[in-house]
Length: 302
Ligand SMILES: Nc1nc2c(c(=O)[nH]1)N[C@H]1C(S)=C(S)[C@@H](COP(=O)(O)O)O[C@H]1N2
Ligand SMILES: [Mo]
Image 1 (cartoon, rainbow, N blue to C red):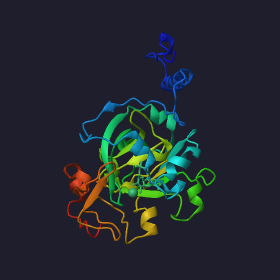
Image 2: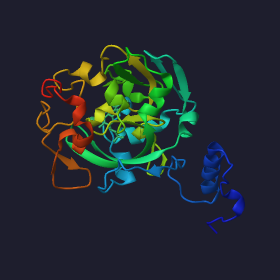
Image 3: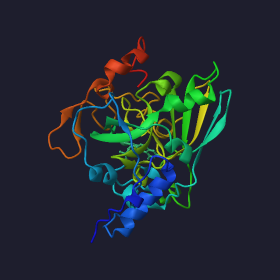
Image 4: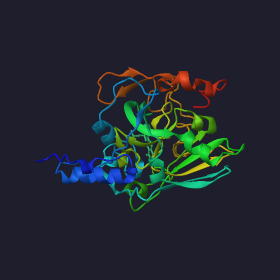
């Protein structure tokens, strides 16, 4: 008998989420179901009007073809090695040009109201996916620390754990992985912190326990496993821009008119499809974000 159906294992309305999540994992395990090596906890979310109606890639595709250089430069390496990253306990320090600097624990952030945001992700290498993220607007976190009038930029850092991250032994990038946004980009309602996908918490290869998602920018802006956020007056250095400034600019808005020196940005291949499709300006999010760049030369500010 594989299926248990006693009422005592159903989460009641008064059960705190952490207990409910633990019970669910236990319930599945004790039912003898075949679980993947990394059983994930459910993360309920309401649907969002910001989601695309395009068909999402499968969970298998999303969690087996990854860029996460802390675990190696091969697309299969994050799925093989990211399991080593200890994602509990986890804190994000938020400081810099803010009135109320503080640290946020991941258990607290998991209790925020979560939304499912089905977004396109376009990698500068020429492939794309559609991913049903779960998360909340970055603005909900930033507004709590009260950015000062000097806060013009936001800098993000990934945790640096050489013992758990085999890829950082090689200096392919200047670790820790660093990214940045202008404050208006960071506060834009499309910009989210993602804690889950496909109804569960994030697989580690996708950036558990918490990563950024900025859907109108190339994938590398969406930094994984964030441990620090700083609000700054000056534009921060970013890992890819430091590694190859002629290839990766600070803005990195998806732009079919500006090619990367090694890859055309005019078209892309959706993972799982054969034919290429045209890449859209701002990855198709131009109606929502183009006004952020009014008057700017986006060829110069690539
Ligand atoms: N810390 C960290 N974040 C990262 C990367 C990385 O190497 N390290 N790669 C980026 C790149 S190039 C892409 S395309 C996306 C891929 O996200 P996904 O694997 O969840 O699809 O993560 C981005 N975030
Ligand atoms: Mo990428």
